Image (cartoon, one colour):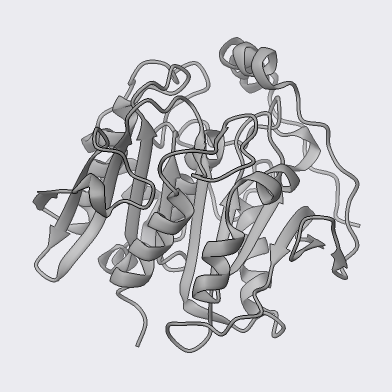
Length: 337
């Protein structure tokens, strides 16, 4: 069994409580699940197995279809939001059809020990590290490396991605900044920008220049890998829990790091499940698209699954973000040889 995680500072829990009481009210507190065996076992959700990896309970989907790009399978690490679990996102997140179409492995961990509060990932603030054990960064990096190294999944190291919703999006952005050498692409749905705190969700409390400096600092000696990383950002126009303005800040943060200075509008007709009033921008460098920003009309604080059954903080109609995100990453991957 892994060693017990150190107890987080009370000040972080207090700050999180102030911001997340509304989440508890709407979705309830996620109940920590039992630690899974290191060997996979079939779960009721079709095509998903359960594994215990790096101290995390993880749902894994291994398609029966062949990979469609590169030297092996792509790997998508998907991070749930507050009040959710990996098990719930496996059932409602609409990943299976997209994973099967691309021959892509999808892994959905549940935050350990109930999260910071209400099942939230610890994306808060500027102090993150690839190795510090008191937060979630090292666990998720260890999970990703373990799955890449596991021969049963045949993962192509040039096709490793991370995506998340809400606090999961905040953590996905942290991981993309900490380890751009590991993650070829990042997907952010309804999430705040890196460096913000638990009390700064409803109003934009940073800017692209500040976030860009932090992201580059966290990458350290790996910052050269930003030259081949991609980012997709999606946000609901009616989100009342995470300010929609964070989507633009996050997109401009990554576009600045990538040198993607050219912009073009996205036609809503090109979005799977898109609607006429959806809006979007692609940021490109001289070789092509690097960052995608999509605002979904009428969407609140939710993962845009675009298909039933839906659930707490999961939209069953409109944009199919798993399909859009995966298509964007596969079409523009800069690392596949």
